[in-house]
Image 1 (tube, rainbow, N blue to C red):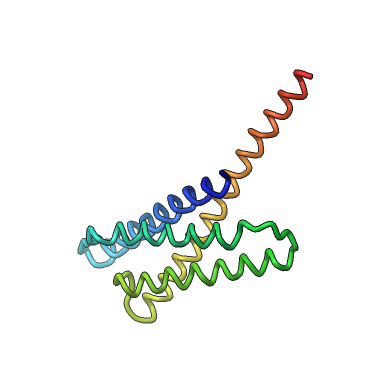
Image 2 (cartoon, rainbow, N blue to C red):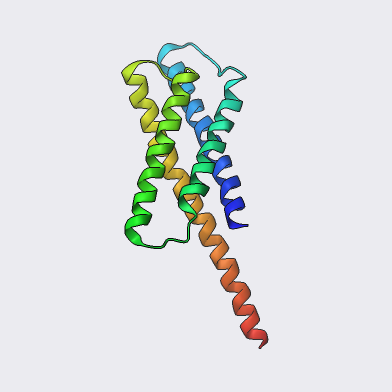
Length: 143
């Protein structure tokens, strides 16, 4: 159940934050150039597909029984690299950036989104822990 919940939340967080970063870039572009542009309608499903693929990598790489600290850090590093490659490939395929400056901007967006997804999942996990601890305390109080 935890895997499914993480999968769904990661998909939603990545998709929402990626679309939000596009919205911010559109506003910045408009402020600089006084021209407005929109994402093509087919790009939204591409962002959701990106969210699904990163969620798959999250559940495959980070949900294992192995608790050794070195292996955990290596899995996080691989996860960061794999998700980064996905983002950059999707960005190139779907025209989300052009040239080196666009690629750098896209990578910075990726790092920010990656960090925010981790922070979001951290707080969701903490919320679950509090609910579990409260339920355990309630059980202890009944005994």
